[in-house]
Length: 152
Image 1 (cartoon, rainbow, N blue to C red):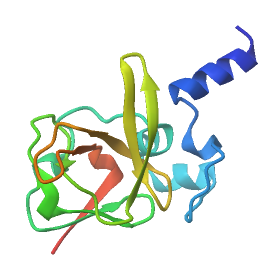
Image 2: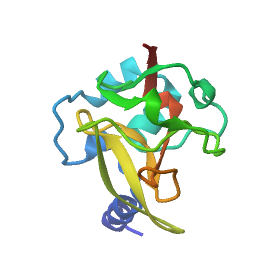
Image 3: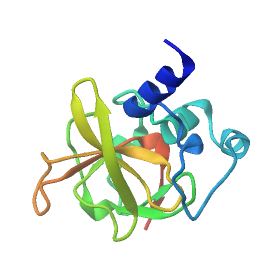
Image 4: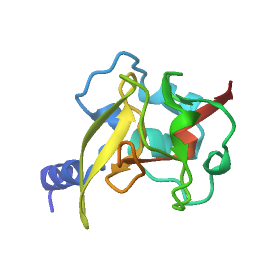
């Protein structure tokens, strides 16, 4: 396999880090700046679209009133009013705040999922599924390392 074939395959699989993509966001940083401000795990999840280990985030069991913010740019993303226990091991919400997140197709070995990212800095947050509670029927399954919680 030559380099061009690998790059095309990696792009299709979503393995090219966000910092190497052509997308433009309001908040931008160099790869070095992202690495300096994030831990290795935060960087892998937020900039390389990795997934934290299920059950590893203390935010999964956080149910105090407050707001969840993007660790990358401090944009308010989710209200605790929309948080629910999905039983998946990741913080889950049935709706984001207005104009907080963006989505894109995320093709993989087992089908295409919908990836969720911060609309302001592009940081990978998690995925959204159609098996959540009413009123939306959505489950925004987020990586806790991508979020910062602030109590009301």
